[in-house]
Structure formats: structure tokens, C-alpha cells
Image (cartoon, rainbow over all chains, first blue to last red; front, side):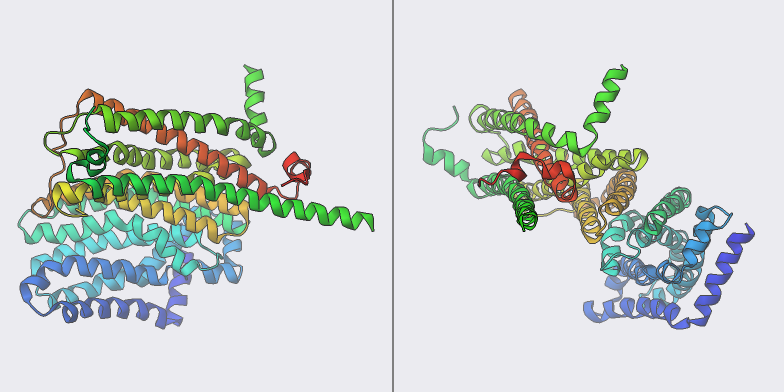
Length: 221
Length: 61
Length: 252
């Protein structure tokens, strides 16, 4: 457990030293969501209808941005091999790296989302549901994305390839995440969507680090 | 037998575009795929033969 | 029993599988042609005109087999990929790689014929129906698999990375299908219900099953042809490939 915390602390420290990467993803998220009203017109009813979808799609793309850098620097400087050789199980250490990725890219999106929701005329209840959905959904995005990042590690054209591999797998997260807000807005209640998201997250927490580790071992050979 | 004449068969009761559009593309791709695969094999065979020829020429020198 | 086990392992090596596949291919082509011609005959000359959809429904005879095969091939591909990962056999990875383009073709055909069926029946080329949407995502999964394998130069690494992707995909396909279905029921007003399928006459069902067999045999034949090409490409510098009659023969 200590090793996991050490990995998280190290990655956070590295992220703090290179703040630009964290802010790039965040501002990408802000800019993309702000472009939609410009393209579609400022009609509040329309904006309210598209808000959950736009914010979720922007969150997917913003998460994608940093994914290719998830393992690449560690692979280049040999840290990854050191992690693989350490006595702690690699799967746990990788879970730590994924957690750090979520804290530096997912969590800022969750915190920024309510502000963007205001742009789209969402009320407090809908904002709350959206934050809850993003809180459950963004770790899922990091976990699934890590598999893609590990598979494309050191592969030419990896940055573009990763989106081809990962985006189709993001479909359930997008559907339940955006659906939660929509269900709340239409008065159906978001509990069903949120519990399904939680179930997917639980599934991913078990399987994604395992698949990521297997893919990393292949890349390290 | 459903059809009075060949023209009736090709007209498909007014659905000619859709029926022949699907069957045609399906047939086209299912003919093209094995041809491309066969071509892929003959390409590799050809380069293997060339390598072999080069080797035998080397040995003769 | 032990005898059979040895035989299986014998054919698991590319060297002995290559000639075996060569012998099997004509048989599968013959079966594909036989089933295909029978199926087409039933599709066009035996099956009666549908009273609701007229002659347009005849697309079902290729649409449904293509859709079935696109899903079935993904499962088979994931099976070979998983086997290759577990047992570390070379041939399994080649099989998975050989199946992927055919699976993608089937997924594409099911989308294409679906669109050509949808246009006269529901008035649009595309509906965001659960089955159509899942078929589209399945097509994307195939493309991802092919792109990943194409991007990795080392064949063994490509096999194993592809295997993990195929296994992750196979876990995700039911989740994606379920989520798309859930999404679809929520947005029922916007889409057309596809459950009102025409009542299936026995001859239609038979025609469809025979066409499905034809597509199946076709897929096996093409996959075997492709696996032979892949074996030659990967084993180009081995002695047995150099000793093959088609490599030694100077004719053609």
C-alpha cells in the first residue's frame, strides 16, 4: 500500500512541476464546451438539452489528450522497468499511476464542470447530478484509457491510435454519464444511471489494471 | 416461381436500387477480398523466389 | 487420446498447418459456393413476396448472415487471441490477425445492407437503433484491432497486444450493447421501433440459415487463405518456407 501511495505522490509531484500539461487538458475542456453555443446559437432550451452530452464528450476528449503521456515518459527513462522489477505487484503500482492520472486530469474536470454547466443554464439539482456522474465516470475513463495507453506504448503513431482504440470503449460511460443528467432533467431520477456507472467503475477497477499490466509487460519485453 | 419475366426480376417490385445495391456491393466485396488475399500471397511468394534466386547466384560466384 | 493430443499440437505449428490449410481451402470454397447458390435460389425464386415489405425484404438474406458473422467472427478472433496469449502458440495470433479483416468486412456489409434495407422500409438510411449502433461500434472495434496490429512492427508483440485488445473488446461488447439498448429505450420517441419484423415464413428462415452457412464457409476459406499468406510473411526466413515447392519452382 505504501508503494502505491509513493507512486501516486511521485506522479503528482511530477505533474505539479509541469503544470502546463494539467492546465492544457482543463482548458481544452473549457474551450470545447464554450465553442458549442457559438456553433449552435444561444437559445437556452437547446443549450440545456445538449449540455450533458457536450460536457461529457468534451470530458472524454480532454481525458484522451493526456493519455499518451501516461506511461511514455516512464517508459523512456526506465522508471517503468524499475517498477516492474520492484517487489510490490506491478498491478498495484499501475493502479497508483492511474489514480494519479485521474487526480491530475479527471478531478479538475469534475470541479470545473459545474461552472460550465451554468453556461448551459442547468439548475442546481442537474449540476449536482452531473458532478456525481462525472465523479463516477472520470475514473472509469482513466482506467479504460490506461489500457489503450499501455497497448500503444512505444508504437509509432500511438497518439492517434489510442483514440481509435479507446473511444469505442468509452461508449457506455458516455451513455450512462450524459444519460444521468438527462434523466434528472426529464424527471425520471438519475439513481439508475448512477448505480450502473458505479457498477461499471467497480468492474473496471478490477479488470483494467490487470489488462494494463499485461499490456505493459508485453511492451517492456 | 415469383417472376413472370427477367425484367420483372431485375425490377424487384420497385425495390431494384435497394435490393441490387445490397446484393451487388456484397458480391463485389466478397469477390474482391479473396482476390486481394491471393495477391498478397503471390507477392510474398514472388519476393521469396527472388531472394532464393539471388542466393543461388551468390553461391555460384 | 494421447495420440489425438499429439496430432493437435502437430497442426498448431505454422509449418504443418500451412499445407493442411492449403488442402482445406478448396473444400470450403466448394461448400461456400454450394450453400451460396442454394441460398440465393431460395432467396430469389422460392421465398414468396412479403405482403408488407414487397420484394425489398429480400435484403434480409444477406443482412442477417452478415450481422451474425460479424459478431461470431469477433468471438472466434478473441478465442484465438486468448489461446495465443495463454499457450503462447504462434499460429493462434496469426489466426486472430487473419480473421479481423473478414470480420470488419462482415460488420461493414451488415451496416451497408442495413442502410439499404432501412431506406425503403423506414424512410431513412440510418436510425439510431440499438442493434445498428452496436454494429457500428463493433465495426470500430475491428478497425482499432487492425490498426493496432498494423502499427506494431514486431509480429509477436503485435499478436499479444492485439490479443489483449480483443479480450477487452469481447468483455465490452455485451456492456456496449446493453448500454446502447438502455439509451435507445430512453429516447424511444426519436427512433423507429424495429421489433415489428415481418413474420418469418419457414422458407425465409431456411434461406437465411443456408445463406448464413455460405457466409460462414466463405469466412473460413478467406481466413485460411489469409493465414497462409501471413505464415509465409512471418516465416519467410525459415528453412521449411525456402523448401516449399511454390518457392523453389521457377515456373510462374
